[in-house]
Every structure is written in structure tokens, then in C-alpha cells.
Amino acid sequence: MLKEFKSFAMKGNVIDLATGVIIGAAFGKIVSSLVNDIIMPVLSLITGKLDIAKLFIALDGKVYDSIEIAKAANIATLNYGLFISNIIDFLLIAFSIFIIIKQLDRFKPKPAAALPATKTCQYCQSSIHIKAVKCPHCASNIE
Image 1 (cartoon, rainbow, N blue to C red):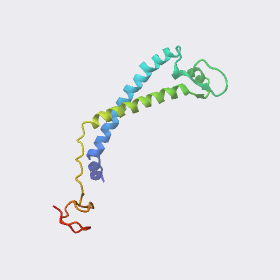
Image 2: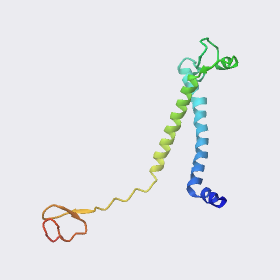
Image 3: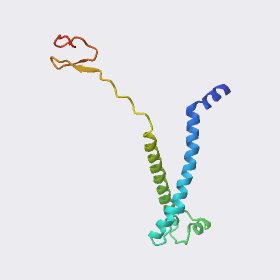
Image 4: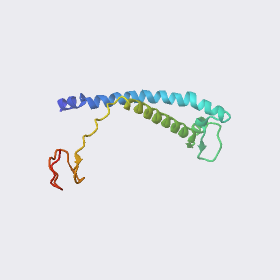
């Protein structure tokens, strides 16, 4: 069983997947920092110094100055500001990965054009196999 696991773990696909997950996690941190440290503060300035990540609704119906104060009072909150921030984070990560994949696709070799499997009979214009030397429709010899 240990040999089978070693064989499985050393296959190229597993190692490629592990590498992708590690790089993806690091890339996610970079994009999260971009959202939290650059985009959200600029968005806050545009919206009149409103910090979107701190928007919430206390489920007891009272108003609290911050999420931390509501949490300290053991009040359940709907943190829709954090949700919006996470949506922006996800969209930026997805868009960035899309751009990277599009750029990497440019370097992939183009698939060879498929050779035609049929040709047209010069006499009756029927479609016949590419290697045919006699048309099955009109019995003409094909050049």
C-alpha cells in the first residue's frame, strides 16, 4: 500500500496540482492585499470615508458603533460589508487568473489543421472518400 501511495504521489499530475494550489494561495494573498490595502481605501474616499468592510447589521435590532462592539456584547451580526469585500476579492482573483490563462494560451502550439477526409467528384460533384480512385455514384475514374 505504501508503494502504491508513493507511486500516486510522485505522478506528474499530483505534483502539478500541489504546485498550483501553493502558487494559487500565495496569489490569493496578493490579491486580497490589493483589495484590502489599496482598492477599499480608495473606494472609502470615493464614498465619503465609508469603510465598506465595516458595514453590518446587528440582529438584535440595536445600533452598535462597530462590529467589534457588537461581537463583544455577544450579538449576532450580518457582516454584509465584509461579504462585499470578499466578492470584490474573488472577482479580482478570477479576472487575474483569466488574464494569465489567456496569456499562457498564446504560447501553446496551435493544433494542426485536420486533413480533409473527403473530396468532390469532378464529374457528378458527389462527396467521396479522399483516397477513392473511382466515384461510387457515377462510376467515373477520379484523377
